[in-house]
Amino acid sequence: MITNILDNIDLRKLGDLLQQARKKCSMTQADAAKVIDAARTTIVAIEKGERRLKPNELIRLARAYGRAVSDFVQPSPVIEPFEVQFRAAYQRSEQEEVEISPIIQRLENLCRNYLELERIMKAPLPRNYPQEYEVTNMPIEVAAESIAIAERQRLGLGDGPIPLLRDMLEQSVGLRIFYIEMPSKYSGFYSYDEQLGGCIAINASHPEERRHWSLAHEYLHFLAHRRKPVVDYEEKYQRKPDSDRLGDTFPNYFLMPTSGLLKRFNDMYQAQGNFTTTNLFTLAHYYGVSISALINRLEGIKLLPSGTGDRLLDRGLKVRKVQQELGLKEIPQRTDLVPIHYQHLAIEAFDQGLITEGRFADFLSVDRLEARRIAEVLREHSSEMIEENVHLDLRQA
Amino acid sequence: MEINHSHLVLDACCILNFCASGHFIEILKSIPIEVVVTEVIREKELITLQRLKDKENTGAIQFEQAILQGLILVVDFESELEEEAFVNYAFELGDDGESATFAIAINRGWAVATDDKKAISFFQREAPNLEILSTLEIVKNWSEEANLTPTELRTTLKNIRTTGKYLPPRNHPLLVWWEEFNIGYENA
Image (cartoon, rainbow over all chains, first blue to last red; front, side, top):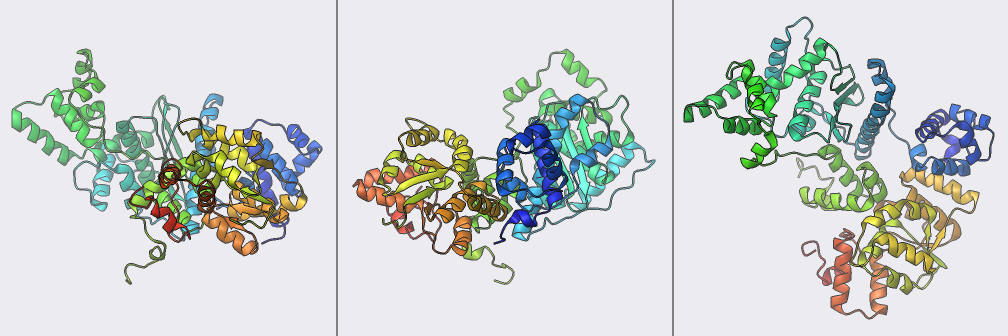
């Protein structure tokens, strides 16, 4: 045990963290100074990393900021602040700043936790990344379809639907995907750096068809504009740039490949000699996309006359009501905040006694009771591995 | 159950289990020495305990009643040594609750009640003479003192299992006793 960790800690990093925490709870340096009975200049020096803290001062500041002391002293992987990446990417209004900053911070913390778990378990996330696709000067539709076909081929997806898109992108590609509650107008965030690879946050409060679509959209950012952080939200642009139009078009081809869609449409049409609203709903459910997305796609390949969607709306089509009447089940989905690999690393670290129960709960962003419930579910999936088997190399057994 | 110390510091996992048992107050009364919790645990775990409900009230209410009745003493750091140990343990464990519990217990020569595998292994190295008790030791002691019938004991353990979601590790010295009352891995 080190005599006093505060004598050896990186003071500049500690100062940064304390400053961020203070600002987050809207305290001034003068307020913080009162907490430790010091002058404001002392806080200035602490936040600059120029003055060492006493344990008592750190404890008092952490309590005043509503944070755990371990948040400030625990060694955690150093990653490039997401805020910097996203700030460089685009301007935002004050209102957007208030909405976006906590999401960016959340994504960054979750990604840092993920790296921390990989370090604890000595199990880095395997990557199966393709080369970045070159799309400069290519027509949008052609580029979108050609990338979609190439990716489906690379990942062995055939031309059918991708019901478990999130699991596939997490496990077969190695992306870090988080489902985070966001204001409704935001659909997804995308970020990349060499250490973390591709990181995506999807709006957890959107319906599954929308999340499915957003995920494909964010995936395109990874495939074609890998190093450009993106915040996707409604009415982002007066006129969308090509990168975003490509992102909007790609899900059409990736989620509903032309060959498979044609075949399934024709099968339905041949079976009954027409294509009804019921067929439309069944097919949309099959591909896990919204009715309007499917109509647009069918109109695009001339299988439905243009304006079909508007006509259905004019006739008073109620999508949710029809879905219920047809008895279409919820699309299978995993809406957990964190990726499945992350969850398994956390439960293994906990079961092997490498992290405490409290830390396990923190990794899952839940309280201790919920953490125990999740642990039970995860153990069921891993067949309650007994301790001596955990490190067994099954290829050597 | 013999404890060779003047005080026993309860950790969050044990508090959760005792509240889930439905007999928090009785279990506390059966502990033959002064029972304490740290301010850090009290502040952090009250929210969790509010979610823990039995037929009568929430875990948080039971916990607060125990404090009001003087069955639990809430303690905070009293010396630079404790504060320094706490910060050092927080660096090692990344867990303020465990760190505070052990910093105070080690510096004051008190015993600890916890089931946390990581904390136990870390502090067995750090403070080999520290006395550590588990949820099951304390519940077993209470059940014997209170002369519980097998049915009452089974209900209590089942509450800890289902409400508190607690399951002892397979190498727990009291696993056989736990399983005797049909709370095994398969029967929970």
